[in-house]
Length: 511
Image (cartoon, rainbow, N blue to C red; front, side, top):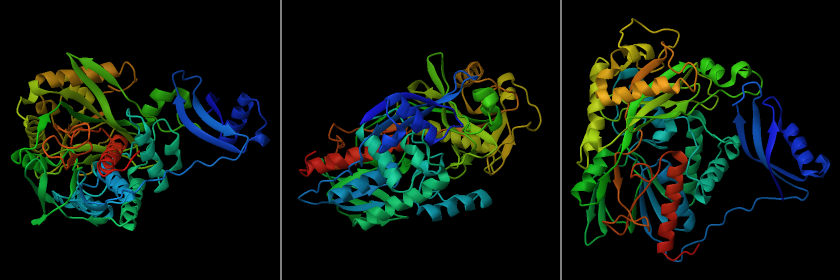
């Protein structure tokens, strides 16, 4: 196997050009190559007069087929409950079933197609289903985002998540793009395929099924209450997501050890996508082979990290509340990323100085923001929104300019600075101006800000040991982003796999 890096192709060049350049660099004839694989492809747009893709490839003069992963089987099975069908719960249940366990997978929301209908109904009628929305339901919060799979957490488990996504129908380019994404439209089908595989392997899947209580006796989960019925399982995995506030309150009552943690809050910012393209690509914007542009910006002000989060090229700002009379924003885009606007959260770190030292101070801080955003938006599920220029200067101009808000339930022009403390506002305002030094036009006057972005990560962590078990109950497994162990689709899926592996080891499987 010959492995090459720094193979450069122009955006308009195709796979044949990449193969030819790779063969030339390896010193072999194209006709001799029997196996060729693009391993990584990243766009280098630092020099706007010379934009190119930088590629890493593998090639061989012999036939090669990647071996399939073989999952060992436990000798003694067990009844395992997995709570939550976001990426952590789905990948945990999938691997547990592969290992030979008997898995029951429950989700408080609905299957992904019915979930889409519930979300559409909320947008049209303003009647919120608090158990099935953009936060809850099959696929988790990530199913209605951009389906971004880029992660700072590497390793074999993250690679397995990508491989599984590919095998269940994700676009082939997630295998090699530096910033892979599936898109909300395609992710729904992939999620259904994973669920159907769990069922095919013998797992049981139940929707509109809610965990309401856990009984712990002598340092072990004795029983759980699901839809009012007491049930007994050998092991319980909690992959409930960062918005399952009722679960965290219940865990606290049951003596499960948790701790508060820092998170971040802010606003969604929208620009015209064509303007972001031009800022990033210059004259190359819109030319053959150029993708829609994204960005990732960070800065610091008075000791607070401020950064863009969940950037959605060609996307939409979405209503993501899971409690009535609140406003929560999130971003999504489809696979083609062909919407008129680009959007991203601009968020500022918050900590105990902002929300207090109590365990649920962060949750209460979020709730206050979300209720105040509802009031500021007019009390009818419109979101409070303003122009970037008005936010920075304190002006109150009328209407919107060339950038039109995409929030589908409508917006109300409002002074969004009323949502935050003076310190947080100062951090966000500094960040927008500072980020514009690196991305021209980021602070353009008629860019749009919409609030409030509050569910960036869980405000609590359910404490677990090195064996992935809760320090309060030996057969309880906090898992994924909601319990404080991940930060996105790929890392949540990898954590689900990590927990599944820990349970398999407990039952004697060797790796």
